[in-house]
Image 1 (cartoon, rainbow, N blue to C red):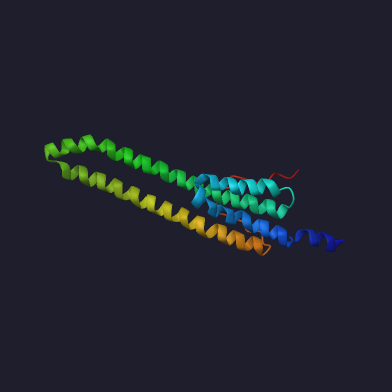
Image 2 (image 1 turned 180 degrees about the vertical axis):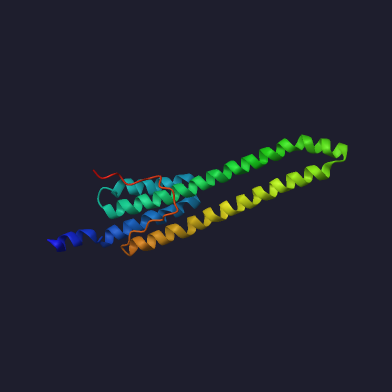
Length: 163
């Protein structure tokens, strides 16, 4: 009896292959943008009921993709904010040129722009590293039959509570 239970816990090669394809399908984001996440979602919805191993790795892949997308949306919002701020500074800059006090406006605007560029660079570099590294490591761990969870990611797709 214990042999059959242990055999069910170890995923077979087909389950491991599909579980490895789930995080690798996140690389389609480069071609399809946000629609690449639908490929991962479709694969997961198609096979999640057949195996708990595939279900776990599908949830993990979707959480990786949703975290990356949320960082990208934050970057877009930050970019819009920076552009709107500097467009709003334009009338003051014209007045400062006429008054001769352009140095003070330049220093305050330059500090804000520098801070925005640093934050933008750190977030974009971090999200790009997440997109390259996490699906690769998740796919390798799925192929090896391991269940890997990333503790620093937000859990958008959670496991259902057991009764």
